[in-house]
Length: 264
Ligand SMILES: [Zn+2]
Image 1: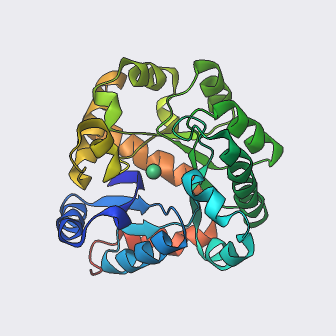
Image 2 (image 1 turned 60 degrees about the vertical axis):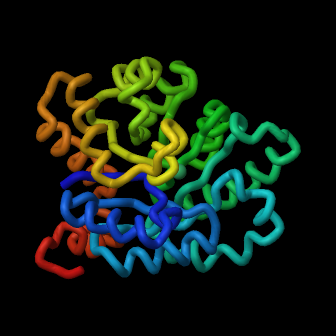
């Protein structure tokens, strides 16, 4: 089974969403659909009803943090409901207005507190704030985390790697030597795949990304590792299963995801 551990299916327009869900079904792609805020989560929950392969997760993206920093109590229900928390984190690269950083940090710490208390996996955005994110993961003693689209310094990458953090690698690996270097630094055991659809490819090329593109990521990773694409698919699936471990809350969900005979 292919895994797209970081996508945003709620950001597709209705007509494209239909073909995206067909591709997810056709290629058997388990897709974690991250949210930016409560409205985005509500849409992802609807999409989750349309496909057994889609898992909606709740988070408040750092770009949305200033809107929610005064309303954190409104988020607790969704946080408790969500099996994984994402997309959460810090962004000091695309967000240049430093006045927003305290709000980003407060919202992120709210989610890290919940992740620790509820023993949840987090799906992280770390752009330009890799060092600070790493410090907070240590401070909150977060054990299970996925860092999405890492492009930061190699010394922090090594620290995250030593902590057993997982990394989702996306389409940029096809074009960027820096991302290839990052992949070479990481053991196969910590690699996961993502598309960041539909925005990931849109950011790189101007065209919205489609789910099947995760196969291109798999092929690129396999080539870098000197293994076959099929072996890479297996490795990513084993990695994901190691990440969820024996967490009983995941068992039912994961069994449904794997069950091809169940509809839709
Ligand atoms: Zn994202």
